[in-house]
Structures are given as C-alpha cells and as structure tokens.
Length: 415
Image 1 (cartoon, one colour):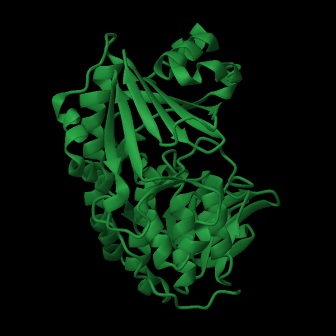
Image 2: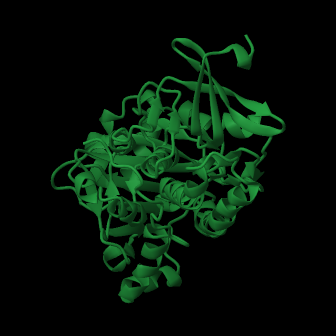
C-alpha cells in the first residue's frame, strides 16, 4: 500500500512525540488557533524514571497560560534548596528563593502526571488532536519538502498530511533519521542506574546528592519514596549486573547509611532502570516542512535535570515564532524555521558546555578515583558566601535566554 492510498487526515501542524516538548507545543499551537495533531506511539504516558523535575522556568510558562494554580493542586514535592555531600562535608549548592519567577522552587512530579495535565488542557481546544498508540514510521516527501508522516495505528496504517511536521520524538528520533539529519556527538562519561527506595517520615526532606570514594548518588524526595540515581562509568552496567544486586545495595548503603535498613526492597536488577546518557545536537534543526526540537534536536546530560525544561523552552519559542505563519495556509518559510534554531541554539550550546565541564571536572574525576573525596576550595565557598548559591539556582531554574509565552490565545477553550 502506498502513502497515497492510505487513510488520510490533514492538519496544519503534525507533532511527532507526546513528551514534554511535543505536548507543550501542541497546547500552545491549538491555543493560538492552529489545527494541530500530536502523535504518540504509546497508549499512555506511564513510563517510569523519566525526567520529572519541573523548574521555575516551566512553572513561569504555566503561569503565563493561567494554569499554574491548577497545576500546583496536583500531588508534587517542592525543593527550594539543593545540597550535596562531598566526602564528609555538606555543601549548600543552589538556593531558588531569589530566582526571578513566581514559583521559587523545583516541583517534582511524575512525568506522566505532567503530561496528562498538559493533554487535558490542550483537549479543551477543538483544533487539537492527540493520537495515542500511533507510531510514525516514515515521512511524506513531496517536491523535496516534508508534507507529513505515515504511521502505524491499531486500526492499520495512516497518513497525516501537514503544512509543518515537528520532530519531538526524543534522542532516538525516527523523524530525524528519516530526514537524514545526523547529530554531532559531544559525549558523556557516565550512565545512570535509577531505582526507588522507601522514604521514612524522619528522613531529610530536601533533595540532595552524595559524592565519595569513586561514587555518586542522587536522591530525589518523592514523598513516599526516594528516587535514586546511582552514577556509573559509561558502559559499565553489565559489570554491575554481573556483581549482583547485593553489591549495588552495599554501595548505596555506604553512600547513604540511613538507607541501609531498607535496601532489601531492591530485590534484583529488575528493579533498576539504566539511563544511557548521551549529549549531542544537530548542526541543522530543520529542512523544508520539518523542524526538530527538544531531545530530537539536542540530547542533554541529566546534570542539573534541565532536559525537559530546555525542551519546553524550545516549544515556547517555536510557538512564539511560527504561530502567525501557521494560522495561514502558505508553506512555512525556511527562514522562520531557521529563526527557531537561531533563538534556541545559543542556550542549548551554553547549557551543554556547562554540563560537559561538570562531567569532565567532577564526574569523570570522581568515577575514576577510589580514595576519600574532599570538596575543592571553590565549592567550599558556597558554605560561607550564601549569595553564590543563587548562581547555580539561576542556571538550573531559569536557564539561558528564558522564553515567555507570547503566542496568542486566539480561540476560546471548551470549558
């Protein structure tokens, strides 16, 4: 069956990928009066150990949309302060109480709850469609221009024709591959083992990290449990599995002794998920009729937990720049797509440069060592000079060149 003979739906913009970038862009475009379809290959958003740190920049965007109050009614945890323990010294790392935003904290929420919330708000607009269990499997090309996608659905193959196709399908993007866009590999020295450990009422409240003796552990307070990230050297996951789950339990208990009495909850490596870390970016984010955003355009390191927030900033800039053209019927000029990349490429490069510096200066050195770790003098300054803690808070919480929602609300939502 050829693309021309498949069942066809049409829209002005087809967004491939129902993650944070795709769903936020879908909401913004539908709100601006653009006929929009978001294609998501899974039947729901329920995938564990995905990025679930909602930073002040994203919370500010929700305020711009009049959604912040409703959003904060959902179950979540708030962190206005981040600290880390390096060897025997506790370092206050980031203080969000001074960031230039209404919500001066990071909100921790399962990503599926965030995506369900955004989807529910987008569905109020008649020109928004969310196609779940719909997996893109190719691009429709006409006269050297992307004119939509082909997809697999439970009811059979489908063609979606669109004036603009947006790749928001992550670091393993099919859209990017089909378009022949190849990212430049920047590299990361580590991977991360993610798992859960029960949390007790008398545990510390704040989210924090622990670094010592060649090991790094991140602990995120999720209310009833700690979401734990154990950082390992790139490609060493099989070695850890071969050593057995008991060895991993010992590592965690040594880094965080207060967890020792509950490590039996980690029964096997079936309870552990591997995040293979990648840092890359596309030299060119677009071609005629196609734009890539989020991890599809630039995979980020988990350092700082900024990935989904940077992707959402991409979505806001895309809607701000392209909404006027998408409300018409003319082809989207390549110059406008280039403007999106020009707007978002600089913050991407700066953020990745900071992440790579931390990877080389801290993570690689820690993972390559075995002895007791002592914090360098520059880091110790955070103990004695409180205003220094505002600098990482600004970079993490607000980011470089933050975006504000300027795309219009052109249609009234159904209440």
